[in-house]
Amino acid sequence: MPSFPKIFTLRQKFDTSHVPDVAATVREELGRLRLGERVEAGQSVAITAGSRGLSNNREIIAAIVAFIKEIGAAPFIVPAMGSHGGGTAQGQRRLIESFGITEHSVGCPIRASMETVVVCRTVQDIPVHFDRAAYEADHVLVFNRVKPHTMFAGDIQSGLMKMMLIGLGKHEGATVYHKAIREHGFAEIVRSVAGEVFAKCNILAGLAVVENSLDQTALVEAVLPDEFERRERELLETATRLMPRLPFDEVDVLLVDRIGKEISGTGMDTNVIGRKFNDHKAVDGELPRIRRIAIRDLSEATHGNAVGIGISEFCRSRVIRKTDFKITRINAATAGHDSAAEQPPHMETDREVLRATFESLAPLDPSQAKLLWIEDTKRLVELQCSEAYLSEIDGCDDLEVVGGLRELPFDIEGNLPDKF
Image 1 (spheres, rainbow, N blue to C red):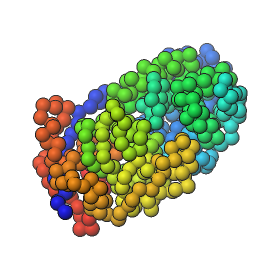
Image 2 (spheres, rainbow, N blue to C red):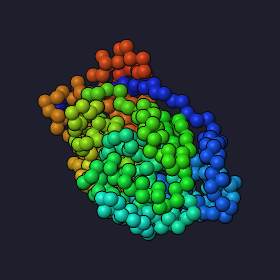
Image 3 (tube, helix red, strand yellow):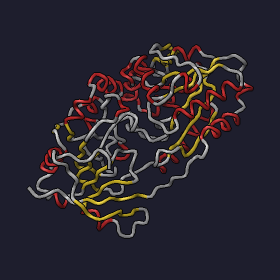
Image 4 (cartoon, one colour):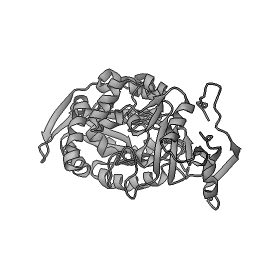
């Protein structure tokens, strides 16, 4: 069999503008809304905490808590993450605590429960589930990142509106909404359910963040309920522009060091790998076009949730050993994406994985293949590229070659290093 391709390090240049003092900006934004005029002393305010690994997550929530206390109210945290954390209250609490969000670190109670209230039914006859603790609070402040969704398209995707549905709907609500979305479409359901939540669930305000390609907080904005939809549409455009991307449109093999829920809802971001609408290839007009994906490991922060493993064609056996298939299947089934939990062929070493991957692409000569090797789909400033890409870099001001060509650095056991 021909040898593997030689590789070189490529550095991408992205827009890295960011907020210098995140906590101060959070408090400034919330102060701009004059919430003290709408919240009475002693009233309770539920603050959402999601399952994604947001940059400055703990600092932002702590700043929200501090602001709510300053206006004389009583804040508490509600894990708002649908079925994540194994669909249990304990699992969801552990998940946000793994991000550093504890009662001590943010300065208020955490009320984790899977119990919901059905506040009404939509015009489509869909029950509107809402976290009971949040529903019984005097006010709810919705905090989330705005970004392109990994499964849904449109002018509203992942952000404040989705958090009010999937996040605060808990496991039962998320299951109901995902089924409804398959029948009616995401745009119709998100607007229909959100309208009922605005009317009946005491939404005080939202705090939206957008991140740049380095996972830094690029933008923080507080919005009133009647501004959610308009501003979220506009912020989605900003988030799409700032998100990291692969540097090339045609890829034979994408080697991914790790996948995980804190990296993306689908383990690896389908907006980055070009598989938003089909697990194993790009649809017409979608980029990049990647023929094979191979996964090397799960992240520690995903706690065994390997959703997205089914989007790959091959993986190392250690990925399977680390997978909690019960949690993974619950999450995939709730999202209506069962195939994302399917187990791909796996081998013990990186050399075996790559050999099987290239064999599946025969008669392609592996030494001439277009191979990209990345840490994960959030960290794309530096990546390893095969020699076949060198001719595509000339004249690209946003790409820089670092160092020369070298062989893939397999160790004596046939594995690549776990860190670049």
